[in-house]
Length: 329
Image 1 (cartoon, rainbow, N blue to C red):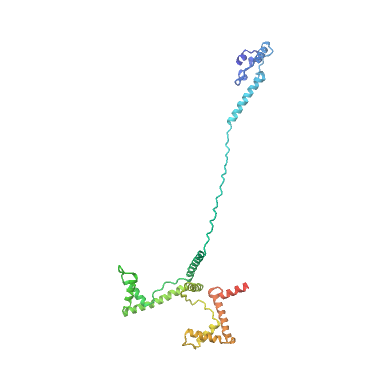
Image 2 (cartoon, rainbow, N blue to C red):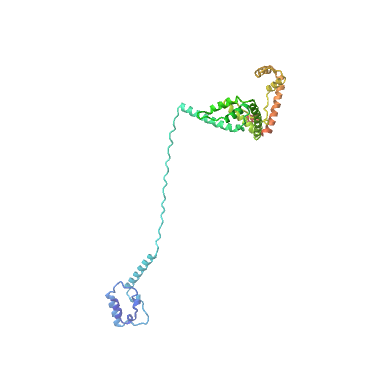
């Protein structure tokens, strides 16, 4: 119907471009009142043809123009929204860490008196074992010695020549070797005696070299550890002999005893008798008579102090204890 109206119109409507007028599809029908007004205007010749184009908005009613504007606006908005990209918003979730359950300490077991004593005794034994281990390390282990007795050499040689029987134990083999060593010839005895003497010399040289491979302070500490081990194990202390060790100072009584022995008054007396005799004499002496030996004691202490510093490189024990007592006082 709109196209029919446009073609039948006269005047200005005849020069209108249909493409400009209806550039977009018409969504609304033109009301009859608008068409009647257009037809009357064309018949009366009120409108004059013009060579210029008239826009559709100037000819069409306002309501019709508004309809086209509304349609184009809605279409453009729809296209613009379709072209936009949607961005996803990342949501971060925080994990809640559960607190670890702390175990309640188990109740302490109440020990009886016997259990406490047993535990204390066990601690003492472990402590003693550790002390003995440390003392043995300080005591030093000398090199192994060669047999220096002729009969030991004879037993060893006979033992090597024997073969152990199928039902014979090692003690039985050793007893047979001892029996054979007792029946050796004179020539074999001389051979074993010469070998024993050579072994003694070799042992002395080896031991001396081993002693000299340690400092005098190490040998002194080793002898101290050997004395402590002897007291702990109820054994005799085997001290290391070293000429470099500093001789301990002698007391006033020891100075008196040495003088009496040098005089030769106790040649035919035992050690016990000598001790008893000199003890009685010392107790019967006056202080002026003892003064001589007390001076010797002081001089010997000074000698010991000086040599101790030179050989060991440290202060002797009695000086250290005296200085400590003075500092505490």
